[in-house]
Length: 48
Image (cartoon, rainbow, N blue to C red; front, side):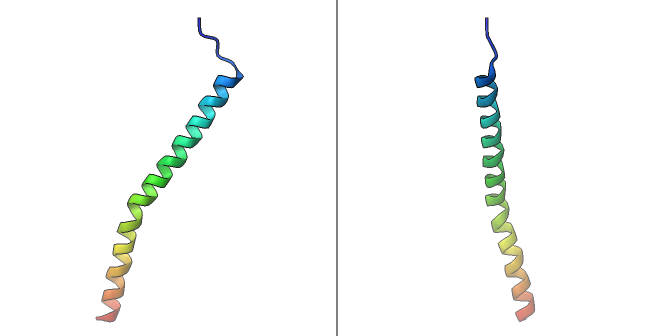
């Protein structure tokens, strides 16, 4: 039988927090080039 104790809860908590941080980093990395493209387009509009 599986015994769920404090150490298991800590492992799950740390893993969940790590997964959330990694997800935020990945989403930020995916969005950053799109934002840079929008900024570049605005600069081109201002120059022209």
